Amino acid sequence: MAEAKNELGGKPPKSDKAGKGDKAPAKGDKRAAKAAKPEAAAEAKGKGATKDVASAGAVKAAPKDYVARLKKVYQDKIVPMLVKEFGYKNALEVPRLEKIVLNMGVGEAVNDTKKATSAAADLALIAGQKAVITRARKAISTFKVRENMPIGAKVTLRKTRMYEFLDRLVTVALPRVRDFRGLDPKSFDGRGNYALGVKEHIIFPEIDYDKAEAMLGLDIVLCTTARTDAEARALLSAFNFPFRQ
Image (cartoon, rainbow, N blue to C red; front, side):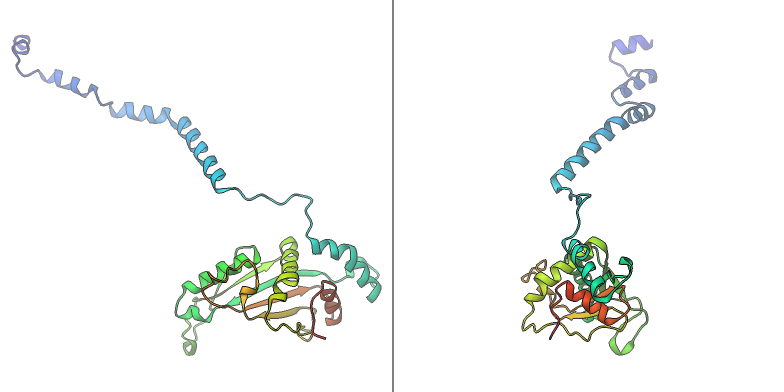
């Protein structure tokens, strides 16, 4: 009777309804298809990643034999000169630059924390290295400062980046200071370290004057291995530091 009903256009039996599901694969078939595709998906992802890197432009690493200009000057000229001047018995006794610390305080960040972030971005452009946002250690109600509030940024430079920054500071940035009359020769701390202050960070060519949100001050501390201020001053003078006469 079931066959007669089908021929006359009747409703098909329940067993025939299952045949309609042949168009969509079963759950087991979907899982099997997904398991078969991981290799193809990985290849497609790899191709897309390489295209993105190519379009963005990968940063070229410095050659292995690259040496900063001022480091060559230090090794070839400054070391023999200091040995002759101070009579060092060992070349390792000659004072050298250990690190350069850049510190930027942003007092306006008390009212707007975004200004500390923009200051850190400018400092990263100047130093060529990511800046660290400094935060308040304790709350001071007089200055409306809360604990752990961002109030500035800092960067510590060593080795090649340190010499490159020093080169840009002496040859490019300091000559752009308005009414520049030389650096104070008394700004040594008694242990061979020298500190100087910059009132406007736009003296560095990396900062676009039109895009700068505000004029920010900058502290620059040069840490050396010199034992006395006289040795540290002789070292910095050899790097053509424009000390005030």
